[in-house]
Image 1 (spheres, rainbow, N blue to C red):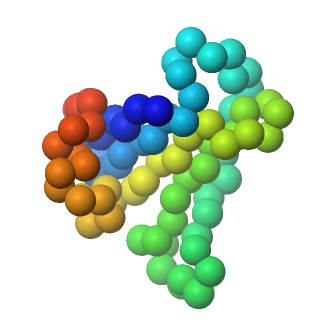
Image 2: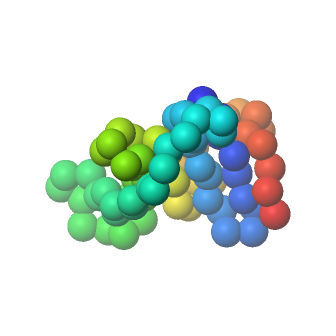
Length: 77
């Protein structure tokens, strides 16, 4: 498991599978928690060809993750 963060777009990505895993074609779905009507609450879920969850994109990460978690993330941007 690895967390990366892109400062330019304020998005974090939690990779649930190792980079060396052959995940094949990935499909993505936008997920919004129940009872939420705001796009700010959305996550993007990535699935491998077998339908297993392989990653989670967290938009507006500074508002959603603790600063200590972001400080340990691999940085992009």
